[in-house]
Length: 185
Image 1 (tube, rainbow, N blue to C red):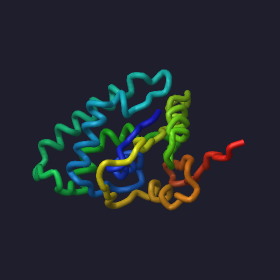
Image 2 (image 1 turned 135 degrees about the vertical axis):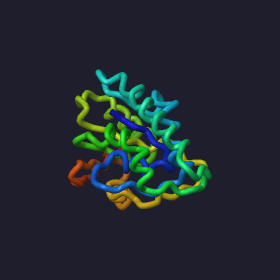
Image 3 (image 1 turned 60 degrees about the horizontal axis):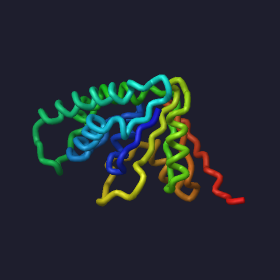
C-alpha cells in the first residue's frame, strides 16, 4: 500500500501514520487540501497492493466525512491554525486506517529511481503489512513550514546526507535508513 503526499502535508501524513504522538498544529488550508486530495484524487494519491483495490475508494469516503466536519468548525480563515484537539478529532478515522500497519517506509530523496522503487514497493504483495509514504515528485510551488514535527519524519530529515533511499519505522519507534545503491557500473 502506498500514499503519496504533498510536501506541505508532511506533518499531517506523519501524524496519521503514527499512534505514538499527539496531533500537530496545522494550518486550516493545509488540512483542507490534504482532505480534498484524498477525497477527490484518491486514485492518483493512493496505491493499493494487489487484492486491496477498493482501498482508495474507502479512504476517499473517510476523507470526505472529515472534510465535511472541517467545514463545520469555527474560524474558516485559510491561514488559521487548527487546534491540535480539533485535528485529532477530524483525522481520527483516517488515522485508524493509516496507523495500523506494522511497518512503514518513507521514500527520501529526489529522482525518478526512488519514485519508481517506492511505487513498486507500495504495490508489492505485502498483505497489508507495509505502508509506503511517498513525497510528491517535483518541487512545491510555495514555501512550506512543518509545525510540531513528528519524530519519524524528523529522523529521515536528519539523514539527508544518506539519501536517496527509504526510511523504515515501526509503531514502536524503531527505525532505520536503507540507502539506494547509486553506483553506476
